[in-house]
Length: 143
Image (cartoon, rainbow, N blue to C red; front, side, top):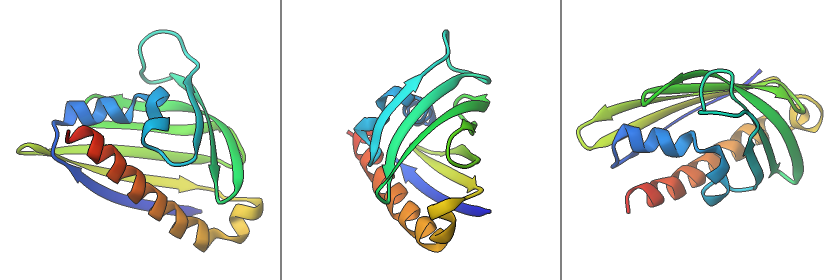
């Protein structure tokens, strides 16, 4: 199982960071390779909400659907894949300190096929991409 853990800090209240991280339909604004991100469930976002996510990573198109498994604004949310090339889970925990918020992200995946063969590269490239994406989000939120 591949695991990736990252932290980033942004000068912004946790509520604003949480809102941005859970606004799945705006992911194209700050996440590299996102082709489509769309909420599939009606009503407000919460535990059990589902979404569709299409992206490109390392030259591979990835289509998946996810389900929110934890939703505790503004401190934590988590999701798991329910359809896609391999099982994945991700959690985001937000901690406030003064006028800043630190986000702790943990992602695990049971890679298969091409991604399993290149697991070390997948983790390395994934971290680089997340770092870049979080810097974009930080730039948006700190304006």
